[in-house]
Length: 266
Image (tube, rainbow, N blue to C red; front, top):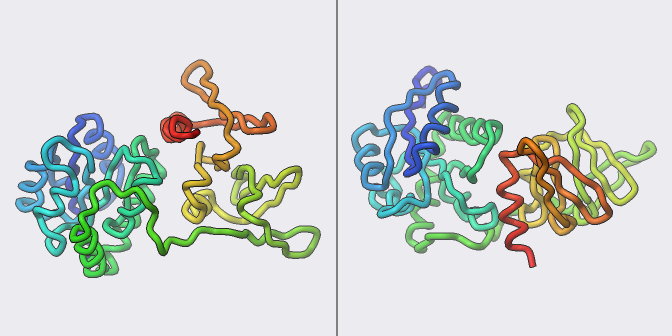
């Protein structure tokens, strides 16, 4: 897609607030044109065929035709770049990675939305849709409806190199209790020890296994097996309590994901 052309976007969600949320975020972006919206799968199929958008924000769970039903009807080769929007948790949604530009788990924050949109822009600029269509076709032929397993070839960090007293050490990810952002750095808490690395929270979040770690705030990632309780305060503020008594702030936009995880914990 030429760099000077508007990115033409279609928004599909059966929930009016969901559509408005995505539209509002898109209107903040330069070089984006919202060509239409759709409230169900049938309308989405018609809108894709009529408007031929470059990018679709596509809700997965809709009555009648689901998001994947829409993709099947349009066909993998004809489907625009797609960002799935879903209430599935991160463990169930990972298989969509092979079939979409990206996915957004409700409720998502502005930063996560921006990351997905920029990823779509890069893909379209590099004309990488051919490979994506092949992957999407493979998923549809396999009959994927609600994936429950992570992508087999996905690799997550197992160790992180850190500097300590003038030398470089390797810290096992399994020993990290939580990570806190500190300006351009991230602080790893490993028992009584702290290590500082020059890395963004977004990069760390992408490289850590979501079955073991969860970003609960813009500046905090926690190891899930250490979570003991979630405390709700006044005004919507929340804190998570870890084993050992450490309390960390939980943002409103990420509280629901943590609540879902707590509900599924033994």
